[in-house]
Length: 205
Image (cartoon, rainbow, N blue to C red; front, side, top):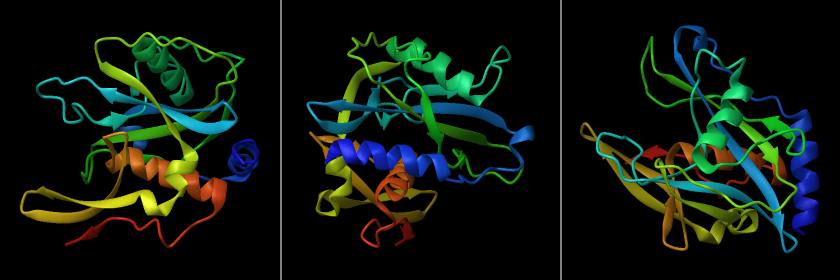
């Protein structure tokens, strides 16, 4: 099943047309890596749990390796590769091809400035040992079949500045997956298996 999921992911991403943020030229930019890997015949994606740091808006959350674009980065793909090596010690070279890109997302709601995140999807074919840096508490492999099973999908309430949102989430081995990371995963699952009404998006409570 998961081998066919990988084939569906590769073919789906090849024809996928992700949306772009047209104002990204005047906004700060970042990239992340969604790394797919087969383990014992099961397809999953590698995520990180960010270390707890005061002042970090994503402190302790489940995320993907990545970070802000630096001046020396040729493009967003180069940023994803550099940040992945810095954060988890994985060099994404020619043996780990980028098999597609997902839609760009705004990390901060702002009319003129914010942070545009570009997600890139890779296929890791070899066995590796990760070496997380100070920014990463742990590296976690999450099965795609767990995410595709909508019975595993839950809801949470997020509140900020008096606004309450009912938001989807997953709990995988007591780790909560939500927010921007889940939006990326939802798009990936739409590409792999088609859109599902059971994967409900955010709504105001």
